[in-house]
Image (tube, rainbow, N blue to C red):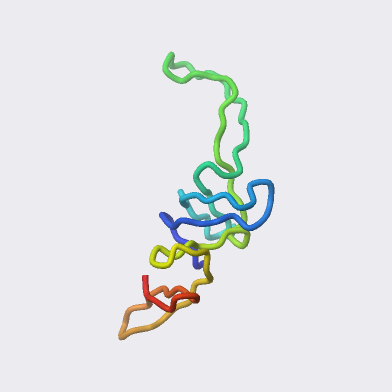
Length: 102
């Protein structure tokens, strides 16, 4: 998967189309990502025995398919496809639009 934790991504389709957010986690086995403030769902949670854990309706980010997101290049600040360049024993990611390694 070409998207990694901490990347800035733009959502391409769905109810949150054209939103920009930071990737919080990557679920490689399901090919999904969790993006900050994108795909918010409401969960009903029961209060546990502790007084600190409150129950009620809680809003959390749900995973979306990685194919619905496009990485924003930190160098040219545009959504772009990601490629790889092997230099010696290191595999580096490159931006397909500006052709620079990041």
